[in-house]
Length: 311
Length: 281
Image 1 (cartoon, rainbow over the protein chains, first blue to last red):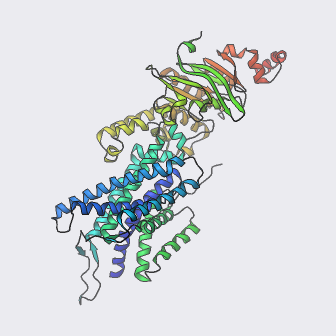
Image 2: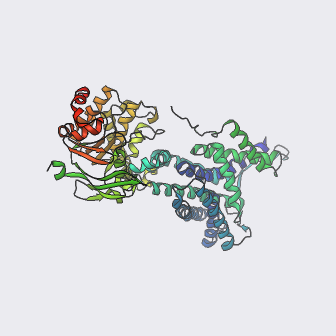
Image 3: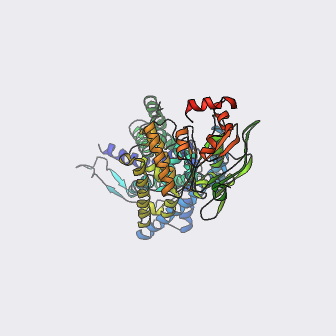
């Protein structure tokens, strides 16, 4: 029981990170119908930006708690802003010139952009792992180890709480943005009929750019959380995290925002539980197998809307 | 000199549109008078929708100019504007022959998208919108009021929260007009607004168009096949055939123009009288 609870906590934490990245995939797919394969690398850039900022600002665990919190918030905001610029630039350089071209063209440039970003970071930052001393330490003990002290102590670390809380806040804010604001409405309109939206005065190019900016900002948050959680990053982390988040988006129903969040959570849980109860080596196989099985029975994903042709 | 030449809202000057070797519209010039209902008519394939597509930025004309005269005095060359500015700056709105609503959004949301630009400014480019600041809430409420006004006028107010795709054909047509009007246009282009409507709906459409013209500073340019609609509500009729203007004037003038009758009915000039009687013109 204690073991299960611990895996659940770990799974939700990992799932939050996947969910944040998956939102970027699903939004971009929704609005322009392409898979932004460079999105995982945008996440990686977010992570590196945060690491560089932490070093530059001299943030250490030895700081007073209030200062540390403020510094981390500052790092988060700056990393989001900086990564958003990268997201915007990738769209501007690699995708916008090809809008209206055949469908495979932006897919190829997406893969190109992904490789370019990876190599850029590899060359500019070096290929070796970058470690970070844990900044947020300490945890809550949820169980006491039983009467004889032999049972597992379930721990909920402060980092995990931070990740889950920040993710929940952002997702709530984001849902509000999409459902309540004029920009969100314009995005949903562009999803359905870009040309018509333009004829109603919506600046479609800007709306698409803003979608990339938002996706990149969320990926940056995921990058910062990843850095704080694992404490080690390299130029290649974007690939696997990106594939997993993409899987999450497809599992939840690509194009659906709650679907991406749910899919992220599920992929995180599947991976963690498989590693916990079966074998760590096959955790990716497990995640992808479940995706395959779900797609056989629900081709549109868990929360995706089936395409209904009205006659 | 007719009044549409004195005070035009849109001047179409030497408009030519070629697709490869095909000239869909050839050297077409006409004026749309401010405050008028102008009808663009002609047999199938005459190039009417092509003219609309040039006006609303779907096509870049091969030759010619499209000058929009805003009531404030500013002029816009429509063929040079990027597509979203045709609505945002030049204040031209249009509807489609095959309806293009945002089917997955509610009726109200369809009308709110049409008011995107003022709302975007009011929401401080979305930041205020997420935080629910006062300025945005007030503007949003105003936008909802405007939407409600148009829903009342089109009789869709009871169904404001239904998905647009679930409406009947006639209701979708009216919603499209309501949505176009929510952009606050000075020129409203309607592509066959009466197509597929039953006689009762057709009558309601006439009333709606007259209201728009009377109570809003909006001039209307419409393509229509239904002659009862054209002759009853329009002030000015332009007739196209094979991309060329063959007649231009008041409904009475056009109705009696032998060119028009010949083109429309595909008969020789000497048979015109018989056919006219048959169709009740």
